[in-house]
Each structure stands twice: as C-alpha cells, then as structure tokens.
Length: 173
Image (cartoon, rainbow, N blue to C red; front, side, top):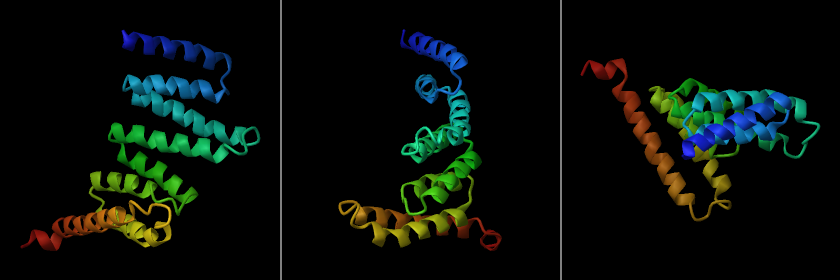
C-alpha cells in the first residue's frame, strides 16, 4: 500500500539523517512523506530542525539561504495551521513578513490565523497594509490587481463588522 511505502521512505531517510544529520535534503524528503501521511507534528519537528540548521549553512548556499529558510518557515506555518496551532502560524508568518515586508502573499495567511483566534483588529491591520501595497504591485499582478484589492477591501469590511459585534458596547444592545 502507499501508506506502507511512505513509512518505508520515512525509515530510510531517518537512517540517512542519523548518518548525515546536517544534510538538509534528507529532511525535506522525509517531510514530504510525513505530509502524505498527515503526520504534521513530525513535519514541524523536521522544519524546525531545518530552520535551526540554516544559519550553519549560510556560507554553503549563500544564494539559496533565504529561499530555503523562507520555504521552511512557510511550510511549517502551513503545518501548524493544519493542526490549529494559530499562534505558531502567526509567529512563522510574522518572521516571513519581517524578512519580506513588501511580499503581499504572506499577509492573507497570517490574517487567516488572526481570524481563527478572533483577533479582528490584527486582521484589519494586515488588510490595511495589503490595501496600501496594491498600487505598488499592480504591475506584478495586472490580471489579479482588481480582484486582490476588492477581496482585501471586502474582507477588511467583514473584519470590522466582526470587531464591532464582539465589542462589549455591542453586547448591551
């Protein structure tokens, strides 16, 4: 069965990692198998190990350093989301936003976690940042520009309404 094959993959890469603990590719391949089996906690552990390894490897892969760290943070955030660990999602996407403050794709992912935690003001702040970013990115996404801007405006309005509904003053009415 496919499930058994993924377990075999995990076992083989576990042995390789024991032999070569600083070889990042083996972690990536084992993570792929973990994800196929919905073993997100194991994947998170490997992503965390990769994130810890990257500073040691910056001199080996100077061109890929940020790309590899970015990929590990991004995918670990996705795994945290699948487990409902939204504070951890926020932490990983906040690090990505700090690294790439003008990269609009990370904001909606963090907003999603804020909304799951009823942190509507934080969601509104991220939507506002996105709305401010769109004029700068119109040349990058000409086909999606109006769609992305419209979606952000709509979602920010929705978050404002949720914030009002959850306020103590609204509860008295």
